[in-house]
Image (cartoon, rainbow, N blue to C red):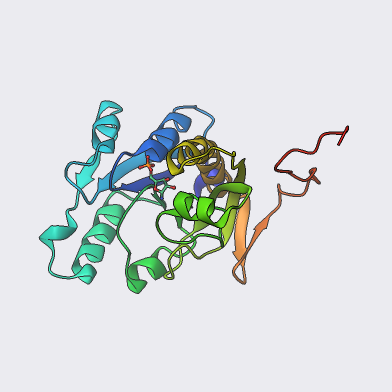
Length: 226
Ligand code: GRF
């Protein structure tokens, strides 16, 4: 995308609604002077979101835009857009943001808005992904960073991580394993986008750095004596 050419960092706005551990991972990554993006704004739609504290402690400007203060989704979206443009944000990262955004907003930020989802999309879109992964009895779970489209959990995929499902997993233990992977891939995905290494062509992601052949991931692992 943007500013890597003129030597300026890409200005990122993060949208949160709760705990904010992915936001935290992005803020930590951006502390590296070589990281191509800076976190210029955090917006929470919930005044009591836990993540707000961490952002403030790290001197990131925080705005609360409470969806309950607006009569319609459109008005809320417009306020969000205004706050992002006033802060000269180049890229938006949804990080546990629990509001669906309207078509207008999504189109304004097309290919400039990222989301992280705790499953290997297109499997398990929506809520309760870990419960459903366990019910379905998949052996590999994971997470996905993608560009946002109007349809929920749709959009060109920037990065994914695969995580094994273990025999005795509960939604909590599996969720915790996936979350660790989320914290690794979100900063990597943002870095790629901010460095201009990926572009969307006809709803597919073209990623010039993604060309190395890698061995398959197996779960359960295959041992040579079996
Ligand atoms: C994460 O699992 C993310 O994938 C999903 O919501 C959760 C948010 O967690 N979209 P946190 O607020 O980043 O800790």
